[in-house]
Length: 161
Image (cartoon, rainbow, N blue to C red; front, side):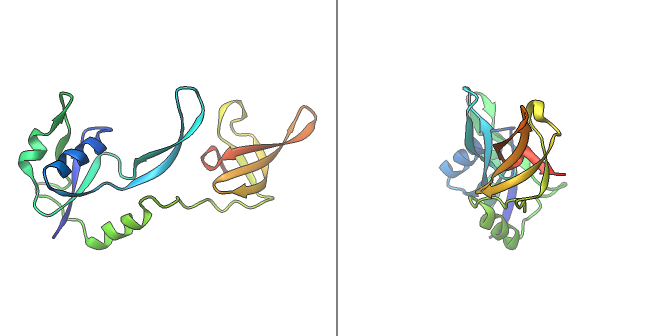
């Protein structure tokens, strides 16, 4: 059976996946972890689609469902990836994506002593030295108020200097 990518409405990948599953279609919606902020400005880990705007299906293309699936008055799906005709996706591509699905994302290879730039808030673009790396969290040494302080940052908040 062949895999295809179904184009979904923005940020409605999960609802489209749910509608297809309810109709008996085999689907695959690869997810990854992303750090964001909740309403109270606390850091939180979110699960987001790895390929925004698409849901993978296997087998025949359910055109009737794609054209008519709606949730809360919004159309969920728009069509199939491909120019003119649906473009099939190789099984090895799906297998490679499945290996990444839910797995921790590869960490940048920061080591203690490396120079990095902070990419958030008022500290944006300040160059600091990495003190420790632990599970995607980076501890940096920074001169603040005449003394060295350790600050813990998420990996996405720094970049190599």
